[in-house]
Image 1 (spheres, rainbow, N blue to C red):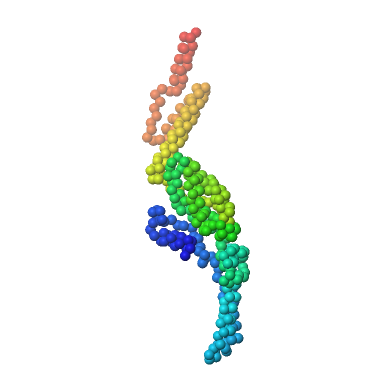
Image 2: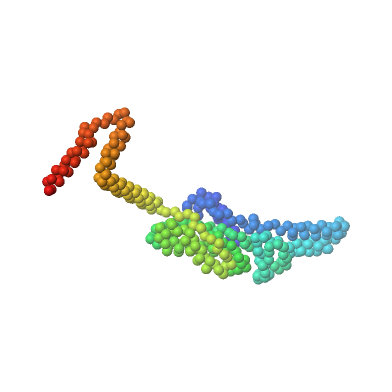
Length: 324
């Protein structure tokens, strides 16, 4: 059992349990098909083997039914059929097959049908499709000393299968470990506000670091996405109060702006009425007309408007005589 099988079994065990590997509730991880699910069945090898065995039974069936049976040539035919069928390999469109001859890398084959030397050459299939690698949830400290819990997903693709298999023992695990380290380094160089508002920038920075490091791994990083950023509960309460105070400040500013505009409009109306003597009378009549239709209102004019104007004119004339 290799390291990949052990890791897959551990992931399945954590997914079936009630808590995750770090004590937190389990989260849905991106699906990654196993090697048995991605490799297509090598039906050509089976067809060739069955056909050779049927041909051998037709040719040497009488010898095997004799008493005692002659098993020499049938046995050699069976071993030869097994050897020929094992030499035929089949790779899917998304796979590349690495052929190792006596432990040494020989060539890359696929997709389609290819031949190998049984017992001398071994084959390892590599998936070249885009793979979603989960970055496990972890804690990171920002530049302003705020602890965060965050995770993400790395999308990568194998572009040089020979380097991915030969240079790295397990390129999937190596990518996860380096992505975790890069994520902590990037978050440590940013403040809390920058981390919350610039997820795309964080992803681009991590992707640049991964591409530089994995250049000789035969991998190509297609993209990185930051999924969840979890803040401490006390910090959530503080940010909620801050947001509420900010909204209240904007409401007060808006109200004060409205009061200022209303005062400016009233002052402009007063200047207009002062410059036009008839405007005040029209405003008075408009006010009376607005109160009249209501049955519960009674309007009493104790002094006619004309008398008020006469008094105003007399006061102005009196004031002019005193000044002269």
